[in-house]
Length: 280
Image (cartoon, rainbow, N blue to C red; front, side):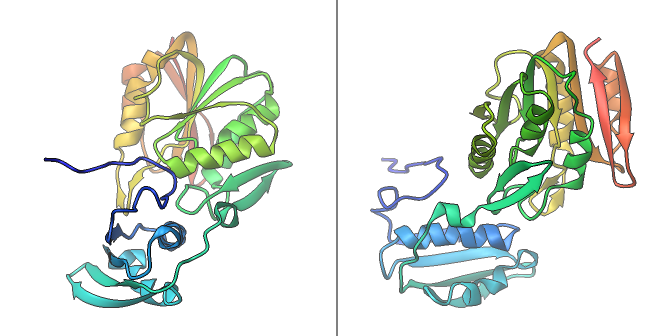
């Protein structure tokens, strides 16, 4: 009999783990994200719950014993060439308040809210700023923001074009929460949707905007950019446009030439370039 229960939630609750006496946690690439998640876990877990933490050495997992010493006494129990396994018992519950972990950035009088682990948490990304600099009040209609993250791009577009109709998608629950907080903080409206690229998108748009990631955890990976470009036309109106920013060293010309009638590099710096591609 299969008694596995899978949750897809922003935060852990006491109800979710009430029957668990062991926690296995995989340390992410960002230490601030790890602390955010572990504080939430420790706040909901009973005293003496056993916890195992495993992670890549390059991700900062070795800092866990010092970071968590107030709540858990952690010891290394095994290691490999690139990773480490540590464990301990929870000795003290943490007090967890979600709002305490938000960081606030300001750009053109806009309030941008960010949580640890969300792209752009420490500062607003220069590539996103470059893409936002191409927005104007001439943008109208329905707009899809792919990989919305903190909601910076959508908020920036609505700053210039308040009548645009925004749909924001991401497959990171923290990112969706940030985007909602960012829209609310600026009194903007937008539809927030959990979606892995186009997986939960079912209509067409006049404009698709994105600052797509080219890393998967600690590894460089161009799959998301490729899938975004290859699938874009299906979700664009006949006069629709795909506009995205990427690193200067990534060449998207082959894919854009294959799937679009015309495309341009409309802005670039020494680090980034903004592509604009049209359905026809």
